[in-house]
Image (cartoon, rainbow, N blue to C red):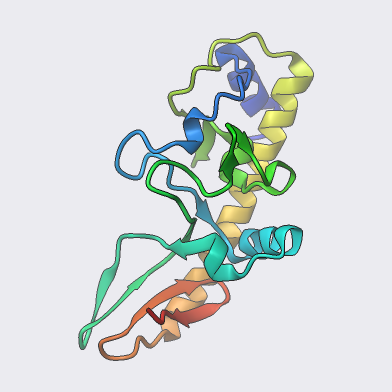
Length: 180
């Protein structure tokens, strides 16, 4: 796992300044604005907004055959309209203070020991050492949270049973059977 200072050096060398353009929240290609969220993130958004789970999250769109006509997926995503995240309003995030890890760290993510950088108009902008350190710290916290979620999913998956002909999401909290 990378150290915060190493990540900060990499982030600073790339440079970034959010332009608040909302491009990352808009659908420009199939699943271009797919935001994967953990159950904890959904619950935080629920607490902040008063919305129900199903108003906030939808199953990750790729399902796996479970046999017996059943299928499952291993993640939740923020709901989207035909063209944007449901929380993008007037070009701004309406849950900015409660936005998921992916949104807080975009356009960066850590994959093992690599810093992955997505396309973004804000790249290449000068970033202070403190700003780079803040981004790096968030990235490292995100990596730890994602690893914990993945471990929780693996633990649940071992004993998961998908109802025949049913659809479900397996997350760190359990098997959630979907009702259409």
